[in-house]
Length: 87
Image (cartoon, rainbow, N blue to C red; front, side, top):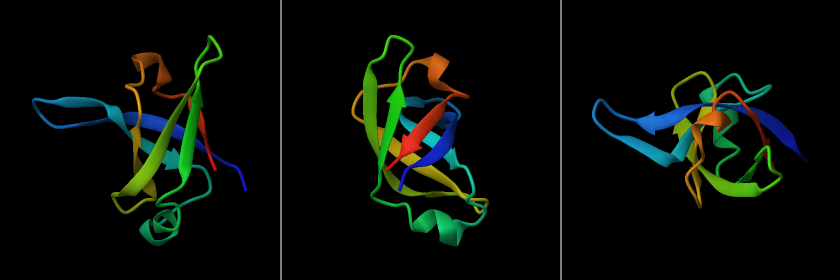
């Protein structure tokens, strides 16, 4: 089953930004319990040049169904607001 999600932001704090840790909102997921079923799934983002960057969902983020994904390589800023595939 392939699901879509939207990249919301980098995982960050007041002083630091982790470019390969992303916060993703899966479409159709509205609670923390539903988001917990996605832990361990693979995430793919396709760049405008056609390159695929892969990551993995590691945990939930917040109570509205967002998840945290760690990518192998850092994603560029143009990825924010773009769609990803969750497999």
